[in-house]
Image (cartoon, rainbow, N blue to C red; front, side, top):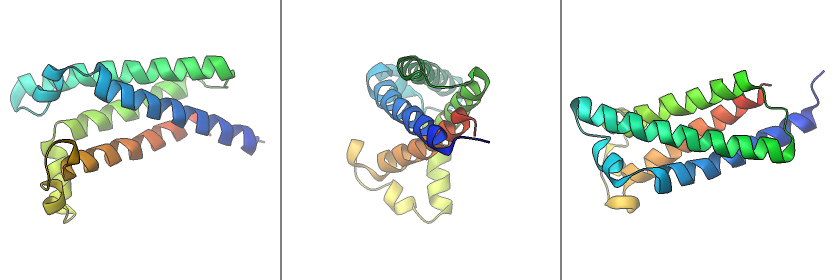
Amino acid sequence: MIDQSAAAATFAAVLGAYLVGHQVGDYWVQTSHQAGGKGAPGWHGRWECAKHVATYTATLALCLAAVAWWLRLPVDLGWAGAGLTISAVTHYWADRRTTLAGLADRLGLGGFYNAGTGLASGAAHLDQSWHWLWLGVAALVTTGH
């Protein structure tokens, strides 16, 4: 039988580690070149996005490792790898930009996506909420329950 309290505490700690890692990886670790190029068409954009997602995922993994070690969490490497993979794939998908813009259009959110500029834009808000959604899923998977 699974100890639900321990599973819930592990999930909460893993989610916290992922959210901290997300903020650091998406804003401090990502280079200006990656941020500006990851949505570009062709191989250049794919390469910049892949480099960003690689450093972003490494940041999440470091945060997870630190929290798991410090709190002595029962995190299985296989489940952690699966959770980090979910985060990486969904992060890459959204950060190519045309993909998330297309989804917003299909859901009737194209006007919101295109509203505003910079970090105050609809695109930025939909991008971040997309990442947080998948970080939650990744944390559940990482917990392994």
